[in-house]
Length: 249
Ligand SMILES: C[S@@+](CC[C@H](N)C(=O)[O-])C[C@H]1O[C@@H](n2cnc3c(N)ncnc32)[C@H](O)[C@@H]1O
Image (tube, protein in one colour):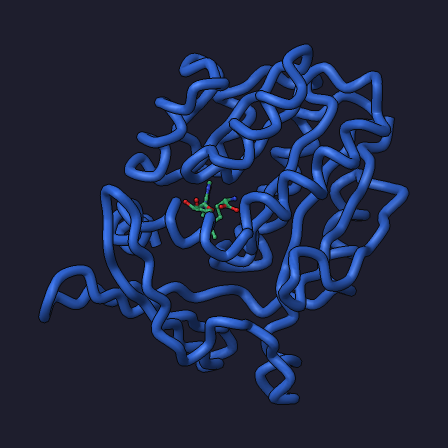
């Protein structure tokens, strides 16, 4: 997975920006932060290129923003984002969060952009939720999303707007096109980006995702000391589900 993100890293920001993905996450999260005046510290535990975190940091100068991710090539952009402090950004697997950040300190932790399904098993997902729980203050908020891909692929109602189409991205610094394939195999969801970066040069990036239902996610949250669980359907344009939960005191 990290190797695949290394291949994608030079293009990731442009793809996210073109899809409106960073802006919709930022809008959603800023709405929550505006309604929670007590928030002093926020961790994006899959911050990738740091675009969402940087946007929030600019909007909320009195909140301390922290970021972590397992991909160094993606983090390289985060380290250089103008509104973030390099010391607050850590290279960290979810399983090592409590070794890299102080415990009982965060008001708000999010893992968005279809990230948690990168976990290779339900056990690993449980470990992630338990690490998030350790970092949160009592009553702190945890927000993450998942895609009910299987249902959508099976029902042929998947409304991914870029499916099977080449998208051209031309920017002052970079020009490339890509298309995305989706399929379900061996009880995992698979996504393949095919990028044409120069004439005749193709980069193929393969990701696979855990097939985990809303019911299982809620069960794992409860087992790991979260309560007040809310589910929002269809956040971020795609058929996402977003779960919001609080750490039990
Ligand atoms: C689909 S990207 C989303 C990135 C960012 N949240 C966004 O919305 O643009 C998934 C992210 O999860 C990170 N990731 C995957 N597995 C991880 C793990 N075990 N620990 C920490 N980060 C992980 C990847 O490196 C990648 O940045």
